Length: 83
Image (cartoon, rainbow, N blue to C red; front, side, top):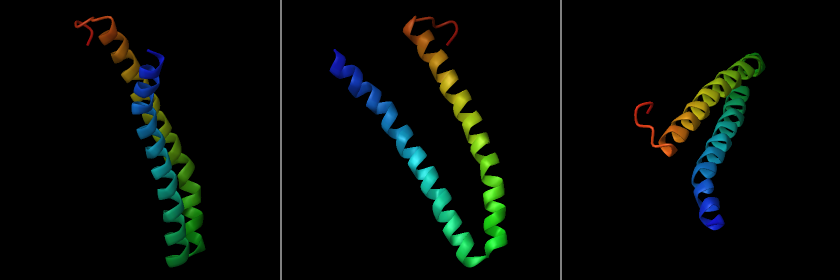
């Protein structure tokens, strides 16, 4: 039983990890291309805006994970009225 829980957890954890890795790689590649093609001012602008983008993504993930958790609890209770 414990093994099936670990397998089920990896079904959800692995895509989340891969999406975070892709987002990080996107930021790195974006910085390299902007820095080499446009210049240091544009790279500075990207560095200035990225924390705001990360904050928006974090808020979206907070809402997503929270609502998925509430939905999963209601499905587990078989409460079809609230789902």
